[in-house]
Each structure stands twice: as structure tokens, then as C-alpha cells.
Length: 75
Image (cartoon, helix red, strand yellow):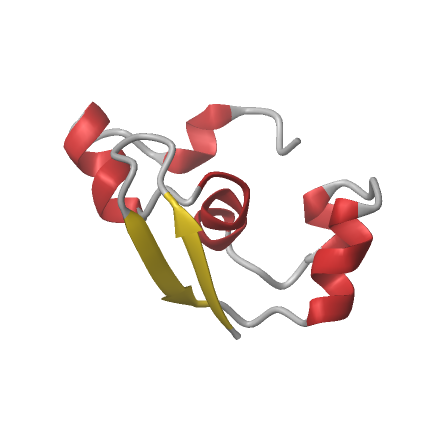
């Protein structure tokens, strides 16, 4: 599914093709933890769904050695 979100970092609109269903998004929006609602979606994909921030924007903000999995909590 193509997901389009406004980046909380840059304010720009970004799109990503993420293997997620509308039912999974609905479950998350209804209060399920994102990793439970979308277990097959990558950390980067789930972060994009939550924030609109692309992996490139994370790298530009925090450097090449920054890994999104150092964010800790998923919700």
C-alpha cells in the first residue's frame, strides 16, 4: 500500500510503498501496538507510518551510524 505522510522533521510530504493492509492500520489507530498490528512491517516502515519520516531523513538528521532500532519503544 502506498502510504503518504507529512514528515514531522521536514514538513514535506513523503510516500512509501509499505506491505500493510488497511485493517492493520485501523487496528493500530484503534489502540493496538504498532508492532502487534503490523508484525511483518519493518521498523523503518512502522516509523514512517507513525511519523512520516523516511530512512533518509533519519540518516540526514542523526548521521549514517544512527539506527532506527535505537529509538526504543514502538508506540
